[in-house]
Length: 301
Image 1 (cartoon, rainbow, N blue to C red):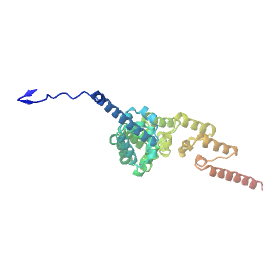
Image 2: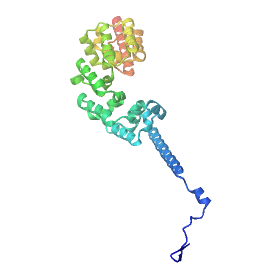
Image 3: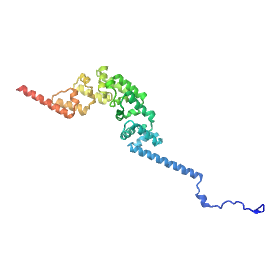
């Protein structure tokens, strides 16, 4: 084409190359690739999460079933939970055991859900910092209890019973804080009073032997009191002096030792019968038998 006396070629479209058009990705393909990449990344992150939980010896299937929110929780959040529990002196094995028992903790907020409980135990209950880990290990359930709804009301009730001063709540008795006041704690007190004890006597007994408040009435207290009264022919006055009787195994210690005493026609106070080790009990039994034999010999001299 001539323009102003010169030859100028019109720009023609580039030659068609089917192979180039075929290999060039479309916008749709790019979107699919991006989605696939994101899916792969999400799968990798989820696998890392499962590996982390497995290293803590947490049953991942149970954890995901009981806490579905765990699927979307970032791994960094799980690390923060472990650091939170470790900061209170819990070793990694203990952390894993606790999180396996209560998977809901895996998605909790340390500052809203866990640290307030530590603060309560430390500053209100008065558990020394080195003992906090022992309290948690003995009663992990305390970490899933509300301070306002459960722990503080139970603490105040226990104080009213006499758990103050030298009898204050310790790492060994923090388990009492998780029990329902009306059903569990008051229920045990009412049962003890039904046996013939005065309320003041029951208060003294549970302070001396806090385990009474943790035992099942039907499975523990009733069988022991029935054996004590019907077989041992015991007096309730002796239980006032030694309420720790309820803390010993009926089948493992109380019955076997009582039967040995009966076999040899001997009798011991509950404290002497139960507090000593098996070896010391046998030695005490032999000494009593020898003493009786000596008395028989001296009588016939």
